[in-house]
Image 1 (cartoon, rainbow, N blue to C red):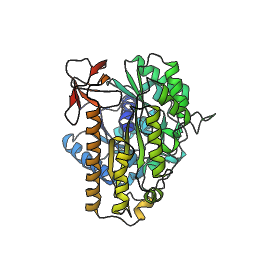
Image 2: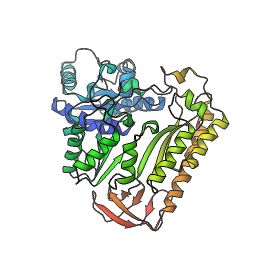
Image 3: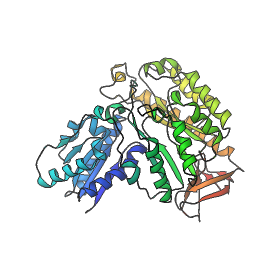
Image 4: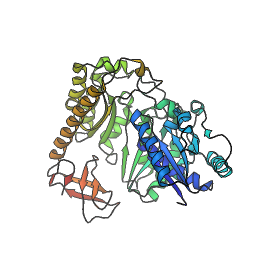
Length: 418
């Protein structure tokens, strides 16, 4: 290999940042290099990263391997101890040109410290070059508007991998979105680690709802705007109003719920209750009756009884969820939850299986309800598109990037059919 290869694990934000990494590494003159952009959210994600590194070394014995991302930030020494790894780069450092220039010099010279990981808690600003260097070949593109998190949920390692919350200024975001639309992207997704904390670190504290309205007002040529995962506790009034009134804001939200039992929510150090979650979903449905809702849910949190778990299971129907992202609980060293009484691995797996089955049934019900509906479908590939509600549609004969109006004939339990 002669170019830069990026292997990303975990969240959409990591995959989005891969474009910036590739650009910066190329600009620094790196060649024959594989960059592994790691995830720390679960122990399994870290294990998969390590396995991938070993496999990549076997496949590319002459390439240089650089590890970055959340797991590299939280456990740099572990990756540095791997003989397959040539350099470990911090999660904030990966977005800057200077870090990649130093990496090239160190790798070419074969000397220097293997680890280049700074204190991410000292990072206070978003990288300004994100607005102009984000490129994607897909019809849907991501605009990173926020990074980091100020909260310390008892199970979560991510703040230690991403740092504290920081936001891109509104005008910078508008410029980023405008550039992406000019490149031909029909749909833009606003993304971040804790999106609803957007603006708390900026002058005047602009909220996510105001940012959404500004984007739609100043970029009339943008066809579709979508918001990725949000913390339901902090959905501001202007955001809710935009959901109700802005047709170009897609009727689809993914909520960070995590559990449906109040005791477990308190032990997780979440800031909402079960009734808060149910009330928000009901309000969203009043504002936008056709909205599709997804949620993150953790199965097998420490001390969770069967009755507590069933309240999470029941939440799928009570909140009217369509999409579930189920996490079997994974103990992360350094978190409060790691010191709590743990459940047996088999119990965790069994509960995750039941949650996923409930999610599959909920998706089937939503697909069935779409029969006969007319939907605007963004064509993602030669075989698939997505409706306004992010439901997958089997497609043939349409051009990637187009938004076409289709009549839904049925479904195959996984995708809508025309």
